[in-house]
Image (cartoon, rainbow, N blue to C red; front, side, top):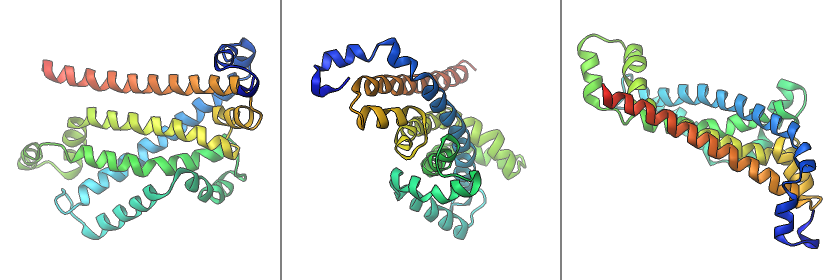
Length: 236
């Protein structure tokens, strides 16, 4: 239903039509798949890069100025690229890996590449928040760098890391909508092909509802887990 030949209220009512939602079952499944896989990739690589930046900075546990400067510069370059530009740049990479530059699997490469730099910086910022006294105490008892990282730094900053990852997942959800313009499938594809190109705004509104719900669930889950960890610490 188009806004051109109906009122806004009529479009909103039409967006709850069961027929509209029947056509969104598969796109919702695709969006959830893209979000899940991309988020896992962002979590793993972003955590590694953020930890590397923290360790190798001039005041870190294992200072390496050249590595810190080089990796920081590369991450900043990736962060400076708009999401649409990143999707275009990742087309050859997706074609090399999957043999095609469109579809749900192909778009995961672009989404992950766009969100990893952001999460890496969030991780770095979170890890730098730890009290230096706790690190010095761990050093004084002979803890190795890996022991300090995995038994002191990451556990102490876990609530902050979770909140940062929540932000990253929401960014991934946003990217899935944008990737629909490039044949990625999912909710974004429906919003573009039907909501925008064919002026079927009832479907567009339904897609908006889904994206809003996904973001709310993600934010709520992140806040819940983070707050529970903080409450447990306060009880100890």
